[in-house]
Picture 1 (cartoon, helix red, strand yellow):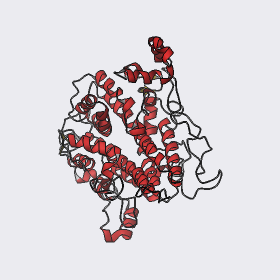
Picture 2 (cartoon, one colour):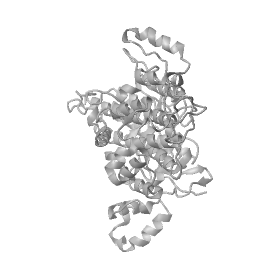
Picture 3 (cartoon, helix red, strand yellow):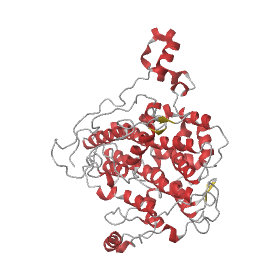
Picture 4 (tube, helix red, strand yellow):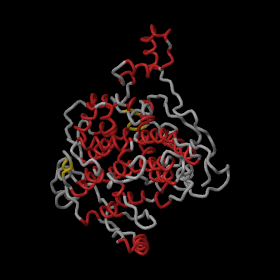
Length: 489
């Protein structure tokens, strides 16, 4: 078994000290170790919408990619969904509660996956029902009166501009992609009517999270920055928007779990980190436990909460950029995993999963290297696998050092991504990330060797590079992590 060190740290509990002393019961329920200072319980229940959508998508057809013929498991055209196939047993109590409380706003029918995505079900507002589809629509005007509106957030702007370059609507691409997957229609250069129902199922259940929920979690952090800096002054000491960002990252199924506990049957962003770390050996104990990236994210979320509460606005920009970048680390891991599983043969399920993961990171890959993005787009969107897997993978790896936004750039490395394993004992062939190939220029080489070589060691550069390629040094990504006891549950 290959052994290697990780750049991400392994704190006992990566939680910064909040307003409560040890042993004092929290006012609000923790989210996987994060203590909100406001009530965002109903916000967090949006993860139950995702769960119900997935439960209602029906069985896989097992068809090959581009095979739309009738199959015994899926009568009729396997590429299409019917209303019956998308329906599932309704949670009558939840629907009755929703209708009783929000009858005046035409409450959702709670009948099938499409309705739940469109109209919501579990996450209630004061005057409406929150829905995942609305996270991805109205981007052009959302927060239009804020210092930095939704469309001008650094992350969202990158996404909008990339998908506009691919012929999609600049502001509704996230909504349009999922609707096309439900409807089996054309979106950009991909026709969801020809890829099989199983491909579409993977696109829906993962795309909802990566393309609808993730950008909205980013927006909530931006909303907190806007609240902290109204008209250039510090006026709002609340942390409600920041708490909401955590709720949309962690989900309600992490409530009252002790830090580091594994949560079964959870598909939200936090849970994705723990799921992928088991494939790449980047969990707290290698292949099990909390993902190292989740430890880092939790520490950053707690630090941002304290900055917002104390009205220290300037540092929050950097924290939000680090969080937004690190949230994409499991997306990169997923992309690498399904690049591998589709390199020789393509079935509808694995290709659909590649589409979802790759679509989430394509705009940011393109910011670093358009050639790398085009190679990935060719596989995920054009379904053209004629290129070299090894070459395309290496192109993606070369973007790591500059992947992300602002202060988040440099957070993604070979060590933080890890190497792909079929199981803890067996690394899959050709899946070692080679640090020596990650840069095409001297600046990248200097970063890999460490900036502290000094002028006197310039003559030894070649030997030093050989040494460091074998003995990778780990370091703390964030020096101010504080190790404290787990929060009460």
